[in-house]
Length: 126
Image (cartoon, rainbow, N blue to C red; front, top):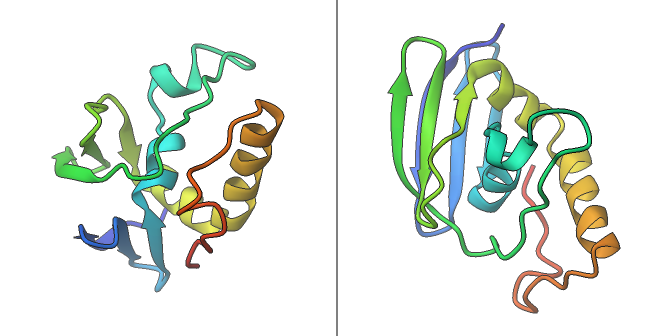
């Protein structure tokens, strides 16, 4: 399992940069991390119980708290702080970023949610 060698928050651009010991570097937008939080509030307590997160276009990370040697707790400025982002979860979010983001956008569309005009066509950096 790859382990982060550096985790850096770019508050102004709302991007978390995570470098892993396998040489990969991911730039993960705070919105993406928030909507894919591993918390029960977001994931639910079983398959099909996921809660679609909306209105997170401008969310930012307020704090990054280490949890043992295996995870970080991301504290978001919308009050969400219950997700533990394990190293494997962060790596997975980075490795499948484009696919997961597209899935999220499709779920929003099916729910009839319009992202704010400022963010609609924003490309997510790889």
